[in-house]
Image (cartoon, rainbow, N blue to C red; front, side):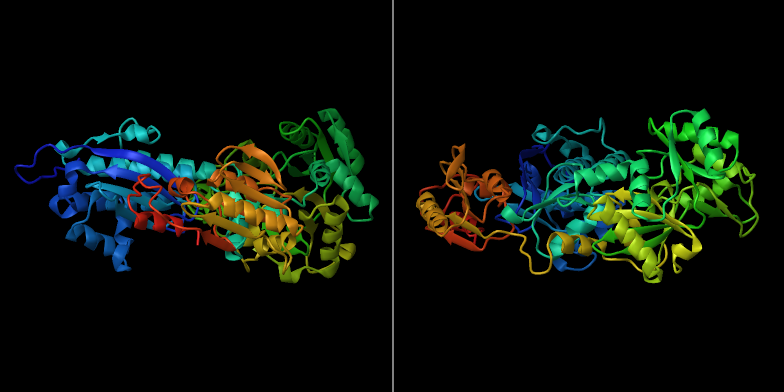
Length: 628
């Protein structure tokens, strides 16, 4: 694509070669930040920094313009560009590209470091921060491919690429690389609810670890360990969650408790739905018994044909269908986390301008940068489907209709954010009766965290006077509408969750004692564990001959690395962790913990040299010092 001239006489270079790839999952020799590490051999390219590659910098900035904002060692925007113009090496360039590619994909990372490897000329450890290690590795791969792609023809060729997972691209193009990165980030990134709780945990110095790619997160260590998946926590009762998923059972329990909830009937055929609707009185609401996110829910069904259609829509999402009375009023979500928060939800809608069609208005609305796919963004894109087309037809519209200027057109019957709705915070407006009703509902169902769907003509007045009440109770409610309301104040819902899991003054960690050194580590570790056990503590211990919980060996072998340490820190019975910490795991992936209460270095001698670039006592001392 670019004709990059090179200096005459330059011989074909040894290819870039990836010698090793690793992931630091905790504090390490180079940083307290978790990082991807790529050991890169530049070969003869070591002789050609960026200022000796004419046109390279301009071509790179055209592909990744965000690099202009990188401060690098200058600490201000433009610093990296200045470094490249002065002359820096391609490993350093790849570090910054990997960081920027992750940010473009949607991650929030900034830190990087590239260091030469002792006694290995032209070999560098290229390191950069990541949020998710799979995305970080993929960004590293694409960063190297881009650097290689922009080199002069006789310098191109990324050998040793089999050291990283194979590239998903048959041939490198920037647009395709970004598409793959964004898709990967969308698939594995935390949703807004989980992300808010994790950020709050970090702010409170509560340790956390992701356990899978479906938002299961472990908080704390040892006997203080808790788990969350989105807004479901270790305190969430499985029975309560099952009750909440059964809308008919939930409604019956609420009515028995004297709470305002609509009467309804479970049906299994369209004929039964029509009969139930006539008995309850039209219009009615039809919904799946065990649905979620507003899928298959339709309101205002006021004729036999509409009821039959609503039944088919609901049955597509559940084998059982609920026909119930319709409350009149605005749709509100009251979030209960040991208290209450309220937000008014507004169904997906567009405002006419007298010039363009409803379909064009929807497309314009979806261009709002706050809207994304699924639950990844503050708002969700509006999908044009059968339900939307049917709903606007009830108001006399089609997708090609041109609404008059200023006229709102409601697109869907439900106000869920997941179907394109918006939210208005009204926490400070909710009437005490309405708040009490919502709190009682969560308690009756048994949920620690609950989303109460509440219909009220005016949330500032009691539904006991105005009519309305609870239409659903949800386990694992999403926090988006409270974190990113379209109007009103953002609420610290994640803080409320952590206050529930770890009340003020409650610890989240057990004491961690880490022992390292050249000789005497195992003896010192065992002595410490013995002393603490004699004091009545339940001790989790790692050592060179196994992992021990309360004096019993549960794993055999050399267990002095981070994997074994994570076993102990994730043991919910221990009062204290005593961890023998050897150099191998430290060099491979760093520490398993972000801080220890006591760090011990027994001694540093020349017994253990030659591993992973550690060639001197000084090198070894630097590795051991990570613990303290």
